[in-house]
Image 1 (cartoon, rainbow, N blue to C red):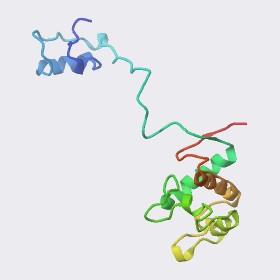
Image 2 (image 1 turned 90 degrees about the horizontal axis):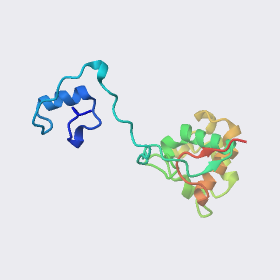
Image 3 (image 1 turned 135 degrees about the vertical axis):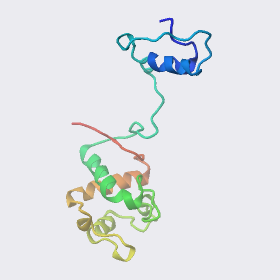
Image 4 (image 1 turned 90 degrees about the vertical axis):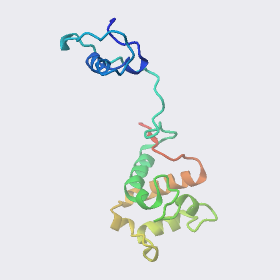
Length: 163
């Protein structure tokens, strides 16, 4: 097609748009572009197959079993709003990664489960029952958060291993 301007800014733009831009002086070209009927317009050039990484949807760094994946989902739905997306804490809730370390204030599975069952009303944390977390996820929540605390699991959405 010879009527497409050689200006690189417009190479992927539809011909009708290019013709309009050329008419108002958007590209340096000596002769005006002829009008192209809608039936003869071509679609924009396809995007390159190698795209830049998407910072909003990075690929999973871990692959976990279904129960651990479901625990991550529960964490994301119920806990992340206060403890942060990756359990690193926020202005509302402390870092669970630090709390679950051996020197943290919840170093054992039993203490973690106790906090889930009873909450910490003095610190503004309701019980899991009040938040709507079913007890079937308790062990998985601990395993997920302990894995994050120990550095075995990375932040972000894990991939789910299908059996």
